[in-house]
Every structure is written in structure tokens, then in C-alpha cells.
Amino acid sequence: MYSEKKDVGVGSYAMAGRQRRFSILGKLIVTFLIVLSPMYLIGTRINEWGADLVRGEISKSLESQVQFYRTSLENEIDRMGRIQRQYMNDEDLESLSITPGSLTEYQKLVNLKRFQQRLVLLKESSMYIERASVYIPPINKIITSSDLADSLPRERLDQVKKESLSRKGLFYRDDDHLYLREYYPNNQLAEGRDPMFVLEVELSMSAMQTYLAQISNYEQGGAAIISEDWDIVHTQNNEAYSLISQTVRKQMSDTTSLRAKSANELIKIGNQRLLTVSTYSQALDLTLVAFVPEKAVMGPLDHYQVYLYLISFCALIVIIFFSLYVYRIIHRPLSRLVRAFRKVESGDLQVELTYKSSDEFHYLYAQFNNMVANLKKLIFEIYEQKIRTQQSELKQLQSQINPHFLYNSFYLLYRMTKAHDFDTSTRFTKYLGDYFQYMTRNGSEEVPLEREMSHVRSFAEIQSIRYMNRISFEMEPLPEACKQVIVPRLILQPIVENAYHHGFDQDHHERHLQITTTCEEINEGEMLVIIHVEDNGKGMTDEETRDFHAKTQEGQAPEEVTGMLNVHRRLQLRFGEKAGIRIQQREEGGLIVSVVIPVAR
Image 1 (tube, one colour):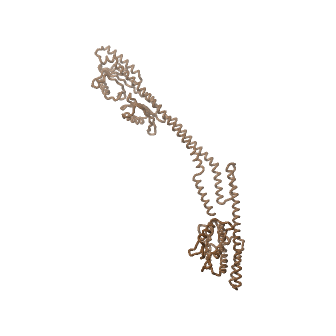
Image 2 (cartoon, helix red, strand yellow):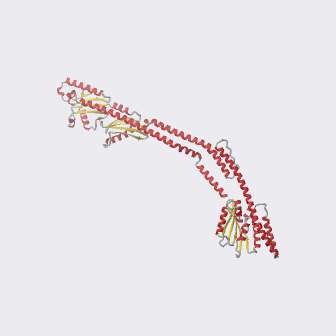
Image 3 (cartoon, helix red, strand yellow):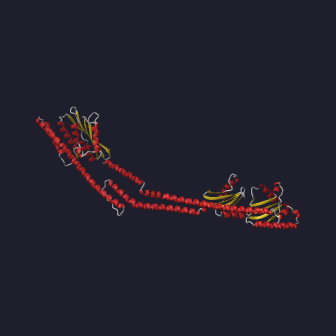
């Protein structure tokens, strides 16, 4: 009984510890998070998928735009080239460059005037043309769309010849000027001779800048025309362009790369991410590049991302407040019920719970109150039954002892009187009177251990006279600490009587019975009293010992209770499961019966 209660208490404290480690509020919040997390993750993934889709569409749109501008530039340059080649067959230009000696000054002037008008038409035909010119070395003249005729400086002609031999593409770059030139004839340049004429178109750098600005007009964006050895750039983000131009030129120098295809990629420079689109023109041998800040084109999506985070934060706040509300309407009444259970566990049966609302907790509280009331009733009935059981078992023991012992005592007294052994009969009647005085006193069910031991001494003296001192008896003095220990009556006489009647064979010599008592302090505030009844008789077989221990463990029906089992049951009813009778064999032969009594000091 004692240990079972202790185990239950430890279990409840352990359970309480576990509840403290992970409360219902925490479980509610975790449950809501587990339920909502899949939906949140799905929503986040859909948002990311939408962002990727929009990013891809924007990339395609920018790529299409860049390809459109590349195509328009190719068409414009191609148209300029066709006009230049048409002008190479112009009669006025041929007469001025091939047969100038056959022309009079007036004819030269007329031809120069007519060809200048054609250059003006060429210049006006495209916004990308800054100036159209023709170099005519035979007459040492330069005709431009703005001037009729100027002298051709020799150093300028030599520079034009040198650039024609070192050019790598369609264009000629001279400082901040970009040219398209047609030489006639080309073989004379290779031989080191002067050409008959050179048609030159100077592209407008301001117009090219305007052209690039139309492609990408974002603040940190830009566009560029990149050749292997020159470029035209429109951007304020020079750091980004430096990295992009290096990448593009590396691709252009790689002969194995598919330069005819467009490419787009996302690059990161510092904390900035740029969406870059490049397209290579085989006709012009250059690459058109545009780059825009991802934030500029993805700004609305970033706003949606912020909204998603805001909604997530609001959802978390709602979950916490809802969990707190559920915690308030469930956990508080439940905690109150748990505290009430703990009071009942500690032995307080005066607990009564009240609950105003008419929900499930009202029913639980009402049932708890009913349970406590029934528990008090059952405990009262059990204690009453326990007391009645002790009284009935004591009376049963007294009824078992009295008739048998009384008959034997009268016969023994009769024999001593007949033999005129008056001294022994006097002592015998004194012991017998003390014995029956103790046996017939029903005023108290419990006595001090000192009184119980005195009764056992009287009983042993009677048995010694009965057995004519063939069995020696010895009782050591009772320790002072044990004298006032309150014990049930008649817990030792059945054990001593069993030793006299069943412990010795008829032919056993030097029969001896000894009673000793020890008091040990096992815990603070708890003492263990052990009374050893030891004999040197025949003892018990192993089977008999096992049978006795089995009966003490399992319990017996009242009609099957013997004297020693009766004592064992009464001790356990009074002192708990630690109390009772223990039996062990002596090494020298015989039996030791120990009466164990735990006592709270």
C-alpha cells in the first residue's frame, strides 16, 4: 500500500514535468503551424513559380526587343552600304577620278556639284549618318555633304589607306568617329598605290547613343554595341558594363561559340542583380547588349512578395492569438482539474470544484465532485471493513487459542496437584492467570510491544512447565527504543506456539528457543523493528517454505487462515506491505521466524 502510493506520486510528478516541458499552448501553436505550413508552402511556391514565369516572359520580351533593334541596325547599315556601292558606278564620280584630264574646270565643277547633292541625299537618308564624304586623290579633292570641295591632305589619305589595311570588320574606328568606307579599286591599296576614290560615311555617335537609349532607358541599366576592339555605350552603371563587356568579348573571341544565337543571363554585382540580354550580328560582326536592373522590371512582384510576408506575419499573429484563446478556454479549466486531482492524490478529500459555464467542463467538474464523494465513502467503508476484519481475526485467533490451551492447562494443573508439586503449581497458576488476563482483555486492540513481550514470556514459562523443561527458552531484553512501539495484540504467541508444537522431533535433544529484538533506523523518521523467534528444531522443507511465502503473497480466504498467516495479514493491514513475517532456515538446523514492523518515529 505504502510503496504503491509512492510510485503513483512519482509518476504524477514525472507527468507534470513532461507537461511543463511541452504545454498544451505549445502543442496548439505547433498543430496550427503544421496544418497551415503545407498551404503556406504551396502559396509561396506558386508565387515563386509566377515570379519565374514573369521573369522569363520579361527576358523573352527584352530579348525580342534587342533582336529587333539589332535587325533594324543591320538593315540600316546594309542600306547605307548598298547606296555606297551604287555611288561607285556614278558617272560624275568616275569622270572626276578616272578621266579628270578630259574635263574642263567648268565640267569638273558641275560634276562636283552634282555628286555633292547625291552625298547630301545619302546623309539625309538616315538619322545615323553624321556626314557623307568622298576622297578623290587624282584631283586631290574631298567632297562632303556639307562642303563642295576641299583639298585632300596627304596625311589624311595615308591614314585612310593605313586603316583599310588594318581593319578587322565592316567599320573603321578613329578616336570618337566611326566610319563605313568603300575603296575603288581595292587591289591598288594592296599594292601600296592610291585608290581612285574612297566613299566614306561617318556614323553619328549622338544618334547611336539615342538608338541605344531606346533599348534600355532604366537608371542603372544600359545598352552597348560591342566589337572586338571598340564599343559604343549608353549607361551610367560603368561597373556593370565593365563586367558585361569582358564576358561578351570573351565569347566573341571564342570561335567555337554559337555567336549567331542570343543569350540572356542574370548576373550579380555587389547587391545588385542585372538581367542581361545579348545578341550577335554576323553581318556586322558585333554584339548588341542590353542590361536592366532586375528590381526595375520585377518591382511589382517584389511588392507581392512583401505582401506575402505581411500576410504570413498576420497569419502567425492570428494563430498565436487563437491558440491563446483556446488555451484560455481549455487549458485553464483543465489545469484547475489537474490541481484538484493532485490535492486528492495528496489525501485532501475536501476538494470541490465549481464551474459557471454549461459546457463539457461543467460535466467533468460535476463528475469529479461525484468521484471525490464516492471516494470518501469508499475509503470510509474500507477503513471500517479493515477494523472489523482485524477484530474478527483477533477474535478468531482467540477462539482458536483459548479452548485448546485451556484444556491442556487444566490437565497439567491436575497432574501437578495430584503429585503434590505445589511450588510448580503455584508458579504455573500465576503464569496462567497473567496469560488469561491478557487474553480476555478486549478494551484495546493494540498494546505497547513491551506488554506483548511480557505476555509471550508468560506463555513460554507455561510451555516450559508443560514440557518439563525439555525445551530451554531464552528472551533477550527488549531495546529501550522498542518498548513503547504500539503493535496489534497476539502477534508473537502463534509463532512461539508453532515452534513448541511443530518445531521439534520427539527424539530431539537439547531443544532451544530464543527470542531477540533489534531496532534499526532505515530512513530519517522511520525505524524498523525486527523480532526473531529462533529454534534449533527440525525446521521446514523448501517446499513448505515456498508454500508459506506463496500464501503470504497471494492471500487466503478467511476459512483457510492459520495462526502465522493471520499474524502476517494483521501486520500488513496495520503497517503496510513492508510489514509481515519472513521465514528462513538456520545453517545449524532449525528455523528463524522474523516479525518485521516498520514504525514511523
